[in-house]
Length: 66
Image (cartoon, rainbow, N blue to C red; front, side):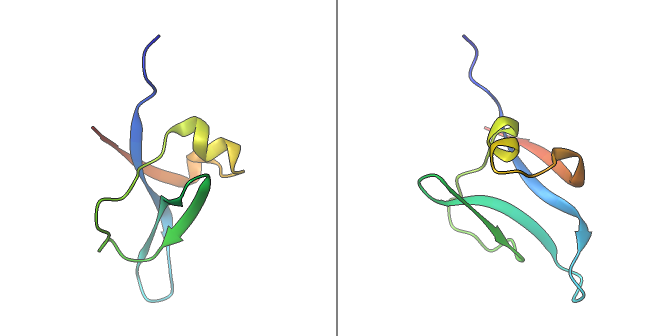
């Protein structure tokens, strides 16, 4: 079985300050949004993980990571 790809998920909308919101795994089983990209070794997410937490993947730009 092929492993599901992970992506960087950045919102298509920005905050009033012009930041792009990015979704990452903060702790086991928890998804956190961050408004800047200054993250040390983030745990990126798969599309199924995004859907499990109720996010619509169509609302995000995604960039594949290894």
